[in-house]
Length: 121
Length: 410
Image (cartoon, rainbow over all chains, first blue to last red; front, side, top):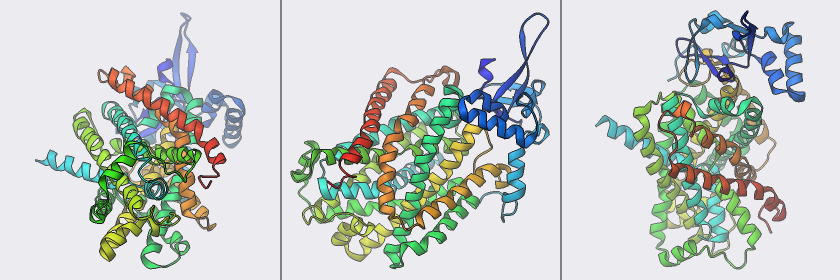
């Protein structure tokens, strides 16, 4: 389980989704812990950073989204297809929906600039 | 045949792309004041960057992951964040210096005050980073950068006393009118200029952009072990021409014009034209590299999509970071700060940030999980550890020396 932390998450096309900022675990009946979801985003990373910076980022995130840290952009563990040097999911990036900031940046700023949708030449 | 061509292109691009504004200014400055007595520092720095570029290139070829990506995983989010902030700060400072360098090159060519060029250049750099393919950026500016070979040609043409140059270099014969603290201050700066931190981020991220695999290792090694040292020879040529022309005349290097002066003396207007082209290519190429590196490092820490291998729409945060960095860099330059001064700061601070950059690479290159069987052998580890000690010493000595010598002016 420790191997999951801070690992890059990719979708089946190789596109980057997020990093594993934290994990959600559940205690099984036999006493073992099992991972139920991967948590991403500043809400999840904040508590792991610790200190003043960590506190600020968790609280800021909680204010902006109205959610609790443990609910921070979760990716259900059942969506994990492969664990190699990165974690690969079985669904595409868009289907997972953890990229609030990316979408905001795309719609507000990047899409407005000419050539945003074209391949680089 | 195609492989040979690819290797040749890679080597040529590595040579032409090696020099940036830090190398241009610092080597000329050092040559004009200390002669060739600091040449050993350039050689040492080139050796260092070869060792670590090969390591980080190996990491990306074998694991498909760029260096900064792995840094957070291996060292944890807290240490990774410290690393990110330190590296980004220095890379941003270098970005400012490079854009300033482009403005100075254009000022040299047109006599239009560099200040007026800044908004135009910043927009152009951003536009290239927005639209141009990664390979195009690398290859065009790398090949054009070969114009700097004019410095080696000029050195030959000047017909210097080779024995005396060699003697200065091999015995580190510091001129008597310069003090030892200044000598060591410039040693640190020259070292920082040769081993710039962004180079390694850029190199490893470029490996992902180009889709390196284990098969790419020989080509990558060829580029690093042949291309970088030859690029280092260009740096030495710049220092040597300054030694031959500027040192005897006690000409100080405060402007890019003085860096080019030895070439003009040796080869006239044609030589000057080549030097200008070389300056422009080196600074523009380096500006692209540093701009991209700011984006790479922040995105690789947070896990955001990055890279020129996807459309801008699909890497919105990456391009947002680049856009904001470019605006910030332009804003700093528009305060009329002297780009040469910014460059001097950037090389010293690069030296300070070196341990942050290189220690993680050494750690990752020894990790079986990413490298499989190809972890560092004893030789690579010995070299890596040795350099880490040197880098630490340089990093610690940088600020005290800077204060003591008042940035080399005493």
